[in-house]
Image (cartoon, rainbow, N blue to C red; front, side, top):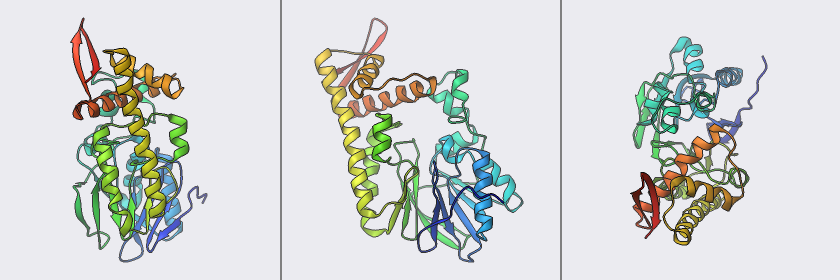
Length: 312
């Protein structure tokens, strides 16, 4: 049996499988059953997760999804079909669960609600449909099949309904934040709701002084001090983008969202060359404009059949 993941302890009975998308592992009261947090991008990830955990004497009976992006639930269907004869309970946040049941909603949403173009059906954006057994909400969550309880934490922003999971002294935060090198590479971070995301960063910080570790979706497990520092880096980048957009509108007058997008690309010195990248960046620009509109820093108007944004 070839195992591509390594079960890595975090704290107490909590572990994770480091990879391009980290997979949390929460062992139940009987030490044989476990929950996983997210399931990777593909059915192959699902198979490898099961192999790794089986080799450690663990059987998956629960999947806790943080949000509905394909790289976080792409292995769900495979695990549900393969593990324990399919007896796996899958948990997901509100809104996110709809996208997981009907994955076409993701490329459709990115394409302004219209029938998507073919490139948006890539496996990075379009995962196999997942069954959902429980829709979670913030607060305590009993997992009777594991004999334990955890806490669901509201971390929406990166995705409309993203949730984190606090198990023992470990907080799994999904895509709440990204490492500095990823920010440097991608320049503008995908986000569905910037105002909500900034509030979630603040909310997550309130847990830093009462947990032993924090596990993001795409970087190694963090100490509370490392987490606090990385939150500051992520926050500063979002604020820089917001401030740049306001300054650009002040200097150039009313602009379309396309003009704002081009200006942001020029400001951070990067180019968008693929349909995937463009249609992830476009709603991200809208999310920044929406945040600024909520803050009363920009307004909008329709002129000559074009929506234009202006500073206030």
